[in-house]
Length: 215
Image (cartoon, rainbow, N blue to C red; front, side):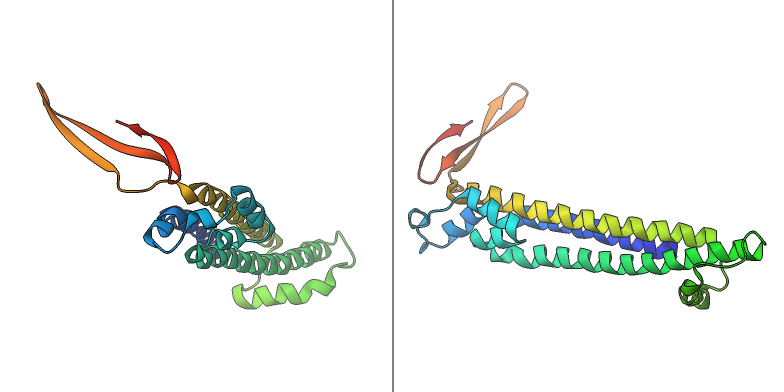
């Protein structure tokens, strides 16, 4: 039972990491525009604020607005996996919660501290678990109930993180839409007393003009 909990937590952590790495590694919209010479940025009134608002209204809408369709499978895939994890964890949580309540009261009845079990209707949940793992006391049932509740809550947190990451990616990508990512880059090696001095020269700024040069 502990292995299932650990696997679920590792799964949602891996989903978030992969989504983060993918969104940052995929080419920016500015690079895609420069690769497509038929696209004219001047004719496309783009707004980072609109990209952020769309991303907030629906996951992936900001990427659609930025025309970064390649990112959509990763956004929807991550949210889908985490949503499935949350649903299954909640189902297991309810099962173990009912089994724990039944068994805890039943132990009191068997100890003579209570005369009836008010949670007798949950016996089927306990029997389902006992059929798989054998007779089990209330303490491990309580522990597993807490574990599944924690996994469910973490899955919801993961969905929120992926949602927020998609919004941030849409906002940043919209800002970079007209950013100059051209190949105006040069390196220079200058001999010195101790060896060589390396320097890089590149241009930062908007593709519409302006910017500055670092060296």
